[in-house]
Image (cartoon, rainbow, N blue to C red; front, top):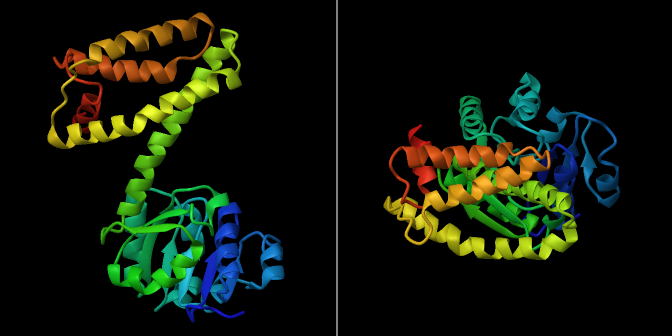
Length: 294
C-alpha cells in the first residue's frame, strides 16, 4: 500500500463511523492500522489492506496519528487512559472524533498534555455515507500547529475540514449546538407526523409541505443570529405573543388526540416567561437571551 502523504494512521473504534473513517484512509492508500474492543469488525478492512492490531497499545505504536471514534468519552477514556496505551501514545497525536461535551474535551486535552501526547478534538457533522466523499464535513479544534501538521492525513477523509481555533472545546461546542438544532427539529417533525396521522393525513402527504417549512429556515436563522449578536429582538410583524397563540393551538390539537405535547408545552412555557418579563412585543428569538440569564 502506497501513500501520497508518506504517512500512516491508526483508527481505534470500528463502529459504523469508525469503519467508514478507516475505509476512507485505506481507500486513499494510507497504511492504516485498526483496532476494536469487540473482535471481528475489522474483517472487511483487513481484506482491503488494513492491518489489524491485537491490542490498542499495539495499534497506537504503528502510527504517529491515532484517530479515535467511539460512542462517548467514557469509552475513549477506557481505551486511551489505560497505562499501557498512555505510555505507547507518548510523543504521538490523538485526533478524537468522538462526540461528547466541551468540558470532557478540555479534560482529555489536559490529560494528554500531562502525558506528552498531542491532542486534537473534532466532530463529524455528516452521516456515515458521506465519509470519503466531497459531502463530508468535519470541524476541528486544538493546537493549530498540530492541525496543520496532520491536515494532509485528515484530508484523505474527503469533504470540508474547518479549523475553529485553539480552544480544544470549540469543536464539541459547535457539535452540541448543531445537534441541538437537529434533534429538536426531528422531535418537532415526529410530533407533526403524529398530529397529521391523527387527522387522517399520511406522512408522505405532509412531507412536501414540511420541506417547504425547512426551506424558509436558513434566512430566518441568519436574521435571528444577527439579532442575537446585536441584542436587538424586535418582533415587528411577528411578536412572541403571536407565536404563543399558535403554540397553544398545537398543544390543544395534540392533546385532543391524546398525543403528548410536552415538547411544545416546553417551548410555549419559555415564550410565556419571556412575555411575563415584559418582552411580549419582541420576537421569539428573545428566548435565547432569556435562556442565557436563567
